[in-house]
Length: 149
Image (cartoon, rainbow, N blue to C red; front, side, top):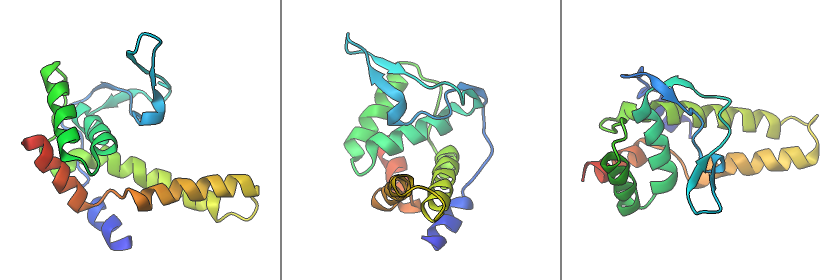
């Protein structure tokens, strides 16, 4: 994975537009209400960010391996007036940084023999998620093609 991580790092760009964003908008921070609506929780990381970069993470998580789903999610977001746009590889900068941080922390805790076995096993599972569903330059290009269509 080292070559791929270096290639991803080369894609990092600064935000184009800053707005208040969640900045941790992963599926585990989404809940359905009793009325079937979507509720976003865990706002402790919210702050200024590029809405397109945050949107790219959502499209990655929910559209990975399914171009039609990625296209539908992005299209509905745009139809509802969302301000973010995904147009270039650098729009995945937030996702690249977040996943890199998650993987680093998971590896450190997984390999730390001072951690309880249960914690090490939990962190090993977190790291293996990134191997099973890796963010790669090719995946970014597939998602860019999906949302462009």
